[in-house]
Amino acid sequence: MKEINEALTSISHLKRSEFKSISISLPYDLSRKISKAAYKNKRNGVGPKSVSAIVRQVLEAAGY
Image (spheres, rainbow, N blue to C red):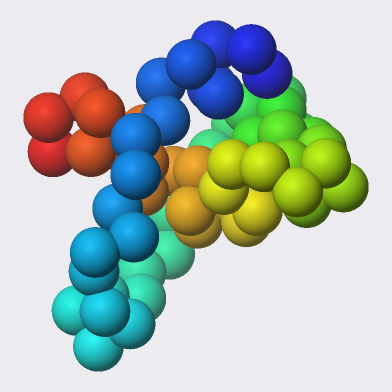
């Protein structure tokens, strides 16, 4: 989970209307790690609080 949180960047400047909903399939272990990170962030009130937000920020940090 530490690796995921280190890769995150802020995208708060985007409006909800600028998003497109998609579906992706992830390996079970990766999906579980991301879900746990989102839950931990929600509980602690820091960082992205959903799986979508985590995936979005990691992809953006990777240059996509």
